Length: 303
Image 1 (cartoon, rainbow, N blue to C red):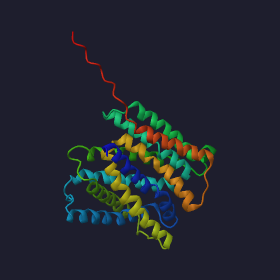
Image 2 (cartoon, one colour; image 1 turned 90 degrees about the vertical axis):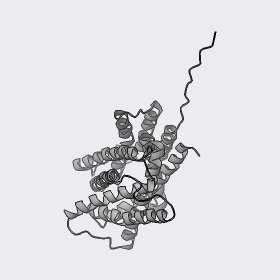
Image 3 (cartoon, rainbow, N blue to C red; image 1 turned 30 degrees about the vertical axis):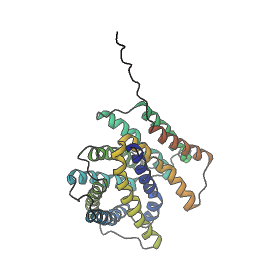
C-alpha cells in the first residue's frame, strides 16, 4: 500500500472519531461549562494515551522519549486553545453557522502552507473550492440568517478555524522527515500539552464539575477516548503521510460523517440539498488525492 493511501486511511479514521465530537460535546455542554468539558476531556484522554504508549513500549514499540517532546508539548498547548475556542464558539453560535465557518480551515491551511514555502497545487485549490461549497450545502439553515449568533461567537469561531489551521501546519512539520518519530508517541505528548493548557484555564475558573447523569458521563468518556485519543493518534499518523493541505481536505469528511451520526442516533432526516452537499464534500476529498501525471520532457534525439 502506498504512503498516500495509508495516510488517507489514517485521516479517515481520525475524521470518523472526531465526527462524534458534536454529539458527545452537545450532550456534555448541557450539564457543564466549556472550561469543565475542556478539563475532563484531557484529564481522561492523557492517561489513556500514555497507557497505550507504554503497553506498546513494553512490547517492543518506540520509547516515550523517542521524540523531541518540547515542540510536541507546544503543539498540544495550541490544540488546547483550539479546543477551548471550539467549546466557547458552540456556546454562542448556531451549530450550522459554526460548521460553515470552522471548515474554512482547509483553505487557510493551503494558504498558510503556500506562504511557508510548501507549494499547493492547482487541483488542491479546486478541491478546496468544491469542499467549501459542499459544506455550505450540508447546513442550508445558514442561508436563512444568523439568529442566535453573536459577534463574540463569530470571533471565537473564526479564531478557532485560524488556530486549527496553524496547529495542522505546525504539527506536520513535527511528524515529517527523519526526526518525525512515532505518531502515537507524538500524540501522547501533544495531548499532555493540551492538558497543561486546560489545567491553567481551570485554575482561573473555580472548582470543576463532572456530569451527574449517565448520558453526560458516557458522552464525556466518549469525547475523551474516541474524539480525542483515537482522533489525535490517527491524525498524527495521517498527517505524516499526506501533508497539511491534503490532510485537511480529507478531514472535512467529518461533516458527512457527522450528518450520518445525526440521522442514526438523533433521528434527524436529511434534505436533498444536504445529500448534494455531502456528495460534493466527498468529491472534493477524492479530487484532493488525485495524482497529477508528470509531463516528461522528451529527450533530444541524437544526430
